[in-house]
Image: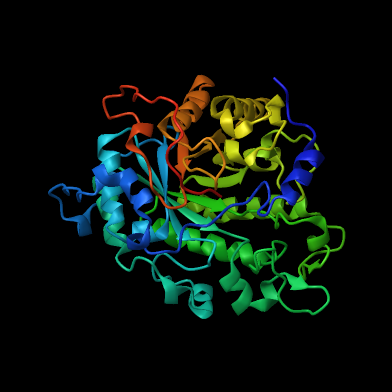
Length: 417
């Protein structure tokens, strides 16, 4: 197997693209009823509302419900719009009938908005409660518990334009003007050197656990993935002399873990898939594999085949090799973790979307191939990512464990991060 060691070449290719190798689109902000018919038809079989079990959902005690172990997660990403709408019942029905046993739910996404009204002072001060998606979040979490669905709170850290704009002292600054620095799609970022940014995320995570979430997952635990010339225009006010991006990320990952340790829930992190394969440097964003797996309970490398460029692992068309790309990336991850006693569990994010017009379209076949690659390596947990939270039933095993029939084809579209 060819290991990806030429990080510079890959990063150069990334910077040529409009969104970069590491582009991570947030959840769709369109209301669900505005989705295109081509998207909605992929879930037509799930449009009947789930029949809730006869239990008073307001008083479910989660410790009394049989829930999956954190080491056996078959999860779906659920954006805040989907969680707060009738779409949630379609996803619950899908979980009831398939191997799915966990939802990764946006508590704070990359807009800075909250899922539910927060009592954290910073959230209140910046207006994060003015754009909540689900005021009845606690009742919805009770329902998920009644259906045996393990709930994971996703919290975006450094890409928070609302926080950057309302607390400019915490934000990245433009070198020439002193105003807010923005990335190439005009999004303001907060300063990842600033302790307060990370403490805010820790406070939101603690609140999410009190709300009923069973695990907290941090995303965008990094610096912006922008071209070098663009980063040269950025000033990080909290940067200490001599401090590197890697040192800042490593210290703050440890801060999050320490602050949440008393709550007794798994603390997990989303990171770039290439972090496991590149053996020199931090990808220019502060992420190094060992810094995460030494601290986290679970690390989720985003090993989307569409995000690897020509030549990765020796494949000219990575997006067309879902099994081989995922297996190669996760082989590197296991190799890096093996020498480290007590290293974090590896739970990959897998691609359940089609990126733009790239071929092939990701159908159940391509998705199952990724799952097969992980399981062939002994990795028993995974999460599917689709920014619209639209999932094809044929991608998933039914509850009886029979492998779904899936053959290669070129139908279906969506989007990625």
